[in-house]
Amino acid sequence: MGISEAMALRPAKVGEAEWERRVMLAACYHLFDFFGWTEQIFNHISLRVPGPEHHYLMNPFGLNYCEVTASNLIKVDIQGRIVEPGPYPGNPAGFAIHGAIHESRDDAQCVIHTHTTAGMAIACKDAGLRHDDFYGAQLHGHVAYHEFEGVTVRPDERDRLKKSLGDKCIMILRNHGLLVIGPDVPTAFLRYWSLQRACEVQLAAASMSGPDRRLAEDVVRQAGVTQKEFDPDGRLAQVVFEAAVRRMEMARARRFVDFRG
Image (cartoon, rainbow, N blue to C red; front, side):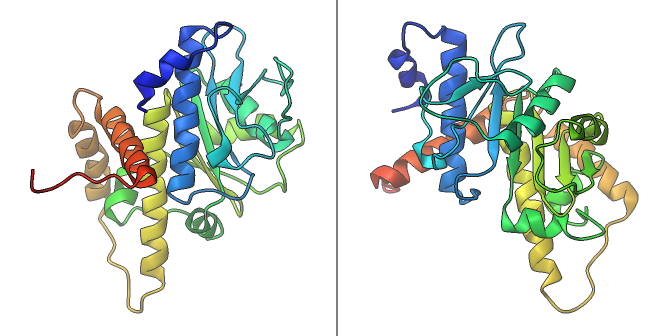
């Protein structure tokens, strides 16, 4: 079943705009499970709900990412209070991080936070993310850093999180993990995919003997410009997201496209 077909399952009490976002967010959770970017029941992907209340959706605490559905996503306010009580609680650490970011940036409709091995490894390096590979170069000028303060549950860290992020769309939480924002799920997903790939490549290169090949600053800056020119109509993120969903659903159903056709 595609995302568009899932709209037919919308409960009467949920508006079309919110249900569409619920389906998209649930699909994103399943993609993260499919690609192995999960950390047991921890970490979060959140998405703003249309409306002036600044409510957002996130995963119920205790479920695996592959158990998340459009209907069991919980809805919370900026302070982390559950808006519509149900059988599942939320994770206080998620409220602290995601609430702060959703509150501070109108373009932060979707917020992704993970603890992948590659992401945490780069977060533990003093130099942080390098920009000397194909993906890292594209992220030049878009990465912020936030100092480690332990498990993110204290209300006073919210302001520091917002200040650290500033106007960037990616933030590396020192000694902790990765954080990405986007105006929608597909954009955040593509940004995260690029960041994860950059971390994996850097980690692999660091494991090999011999000096790394450094890119000149003007080349790195041009890489960011070229990346925007590659997607003039702004549809790349949606195309990538839909392709990822198809790949996941085909693998789950053990379906294949016959190349002879």
